[in-house]
Length: 162
Image (cartoon, rainbow, N blue to C red; front, side, top):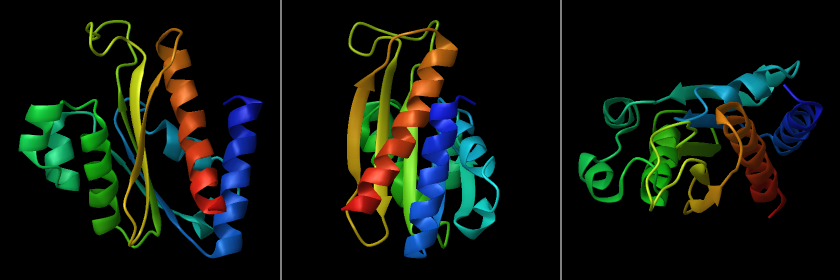
């Protein structure tokens, strides 16, 4: 893990702990990378509840309750799906805040409309509407995944500062 990611994870944990909140992750393209980054911080059990790795569409439906019709109409890499993922993660966890990601890390799998590096992220506090964002990250598979983890943590910090 890069020092930048470690610092973001540390700041995320400090903010969550200061506010008495807990985090849940729902990850597709990062394969648990966000959860790994936050659990690398000593004491993270005070503010990290659990993580869902939902790589396949079936797992998004089974574990998080994502509506299959949304997956069919919007595609797995969509703001609609990551918003459904945050809602499902919060419904299946006592956590206060969720982050979800789904994307095309490459090297294959992209299309003209959703090229390699397209990543959708969502953040949601319990009782509030999700906030979503679509990013286009450049680089190889590892770089896309690392940038996604960093952006996910930055978004958590932003949500906590509001």
